[in-house]
Length: 435
Ligand code: AMP
Ligand code: GLY
Picture 1 (cartoon, rainbow, N blue to C red):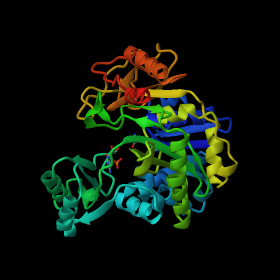
Picture 2 (picture 1 turned 90 degrees about the vertical axis):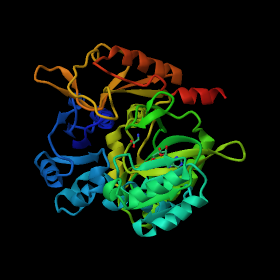
Picture 3 (picture 1 turned 30 degrees about the vertical axis):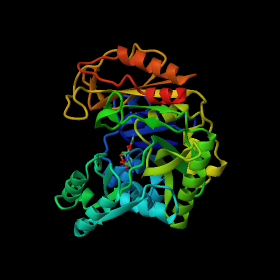
């Protein structure tokens, strides 16, 4: 069949690579894609918010399956647009309806959903400009640090963790009254701080059945030792060593199953990925308990770059089973090895950075997979930087240290002016394993 994948990052390159491997895939189109995705299929110049143009492309090119990478078109209702069109409703589309996408698009919606279905998460309350004073009083009842979350999508910048109570109150006012994050902070979720280790659990669901994909941990801060500004993600590893059978049993029974049952009970049309951001909090018996920090309605980036290379099954068959509500009949086989990925970024990222630098060394590295994030080719065929996160080096190894070492060795060989990467991806997990 012909397949259209929407998106342009490292996540989409990793998904495209798996789709291209499928014997079910005849033609793969990636919109808009990047310089790397051209190795998997044909890039097409479509805007992700132009559903009409996407629909026309799908019809003209006899596309039978659409896979949506990023959240924005999902929150914007692309799945509903297809469902409401006499012809497009027959096209398989992987992603939730706008109703389902509110799990990511509104933190308050997600928290209310978790409360309704008894899913463990931090205690919280939601405030608007009219209830600012109540919000300040609620902050006084919490212990530092204080967690403030803009309700809506804020390009990953809407969560603030503040140590000082007065500062937290001032920030709450700035968010609610002065619209610090625009529309997104008209409502703010104030919640209890959870202390523990974060990890990401990915689920593919057809709305009734589900498959739990490999776990991953991503590294959000720009600096080594998890310091400095937040980024889109500087690397990831999969699986997460402490997410053993006992922990994953708790995740499945306390979180995944009630989430899927909740989706069903509330008649939310959902055929796609659920990315559950978890905090593993130390429990009284010496184990760890999972709490949901957030839901996302897509795969993570750069988690996909370590999760997808471990999927051995045909992903198009998994997607087809998802679209047909037959995910219970599909097979998910996972490579037991560990994957690590290291993101190479432009100088200055996540603040202002330059584009257009010539990249060298990509064709020389061996034993790793390179996923492109922000790249393009110029008219001479040279590979150029075209974003803050530029390239992602992924490797599979028998051990976590082995996988990390291969990534670092390859990252060192790839060069452009000001190229930066973190050398400590996975090191926290290695330390934890030694404890
Ligand atoms: P979110 O956008 O909800 O994932 O939040 C961004 C980051 O803030 C998370 O990845 C966590 O590192 C942190 N965070 C969010 N909520 C909490 C919480 N309740 N307790 C501790 N850290 C949190
Ligand atoms: N890596 C985190 C995200 O994709 O939101």
